[in-house]
Image (cartoon, rainbow, N blue to C red):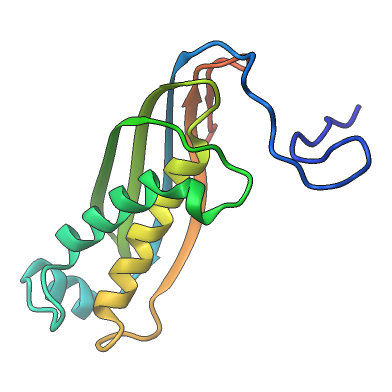
Length: 158
């Protein structure tokens, strides 16, 4: 059985979901992505020698700001009151892993906010280092966890 797409109305047109009758619940989501970087670029970031400034701090702020403004970027998302946005970054073999965690009390989930935060943090890293490494690759953007609402808890199985 195929699930119905929530942003399509009865006549097949795009529509914003009416969440007015849904109860407020605590919602949390986490999303991650990875930016592949050369060892020399990793060393440059760690040494805080990038020409545009301190890469990780600026990317963290960009990711937080993007998560808060997801509703302005993705047309059918709702403006939800985020109470927490956290961006974590960790170097590993071949690059930088980025995770965005969000929390809110709302009538709809925060998955898109977590995904947007992780993606924009990675895009900001790319912007900060592109003079040194134009071939950096951003990938593996995915939802890791969500909780709250009718569907309850979901966690990605590795």
